[in-house]
Picture 1 (cartoon, rainbow, N blue to C red):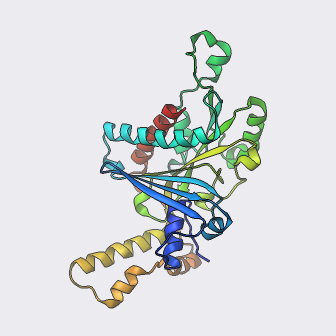
Picture 2 (tube, helix red, strand yellow):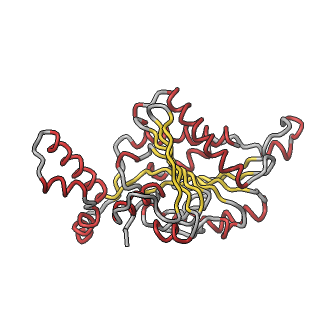
Picture 3 (cartoon, rainbow, N blue to C red):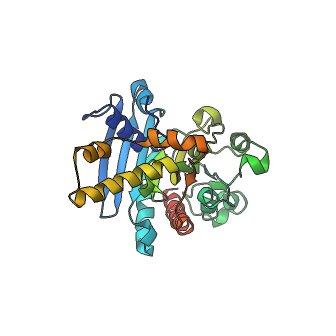
Length: 311
């Protein structure tokens, strides 16, 4: 059994193919990739049956991964372009599950006081909400405007209430037709920290990215479709060491110091061995980069503008 330790369907797919030495696509999964300019790559993974679900441990549905390179150095025009692409992909998912006039509730999960977990609440502050205007001042609303509301429900440690319980109460009283939920994820690549957006229409499990799983938020629990927008903000120390080892081997290879042993080491996934060595001393920490504040701010702009344009 592959230990994925990542929330990204595209990474799970690659890990499974590598572990099973598959050259072709996994049974029960369809995928495609698209390059958008020099800095943005889109990978679409669709799980179509139970075999695909069992292979990579994700429920059937659509998963779109948008990788944005060099986000640390992004200019305003780069952020704007990334927001447009996120919007285009999000709108495709929305159109699969909601009508043009259906109301939407946007939910920002996470703890605003913990930077790697603050993206959801920060995005909520940027969402263009319309429900109150349509209810109390409809004369000022353009025809065709969608009813949008937003909330950041906080975390269990500060509210004492499961997020799924809070959202279920809102859904039962406000009656949105679709949820868009934003949360932090874990990745198996240091390059993807706050530089990747995963969109999916299968719901989300809050806290899964840091090993603190809560009740899932999905169509099964909410009674309406749920689109999840996940952004990796942390990796485990074992992932960091494994990726660093790969980079070290590549450097030796470039300096013509390669040999069969190094080649074999580079081809192997050493995550499990490294993880087992770190866990007994509690050294398998959750790691985030020093630029996390700037990365979160950039990603906040991309995600918020993407949602606003899409809805």
